Length: 97
Image (cartoon, rainbow, N blue to C red; front, side, top):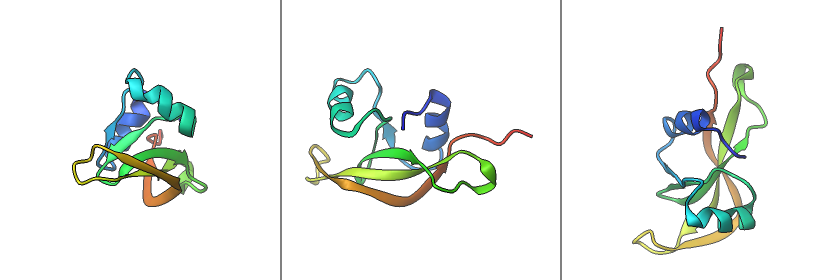
C-alpha cells in the first residue's frame, strides 16, 4: 500500500521506524520485489503497511507487515521472507466529526 505524506506521518507516530524516501535508489528494487509500497525500516527489518481487514469505527487503518529481517547485528543486510503480519495496527487518518 502506497501511503501519502499525511498517512506516513500518522503511521510514524504509532510505531518506531524510518520511512525510505521514494527517491532513494533502493526503492525501485524494492518495488520490483514487493510491489508499489511505502517502505519502513525498524529494528526488525523491512516493513510495509497493508490495509486492515477491520478498522475500528470505520477509520482507515493498516497492519504493519514485515517483509525482511536484519541478517546481521550491524543492520546492514536484510534477508527477505514470506510477508509476516505483525501485531502493529496503525490508524491512517483522523476521524473528522
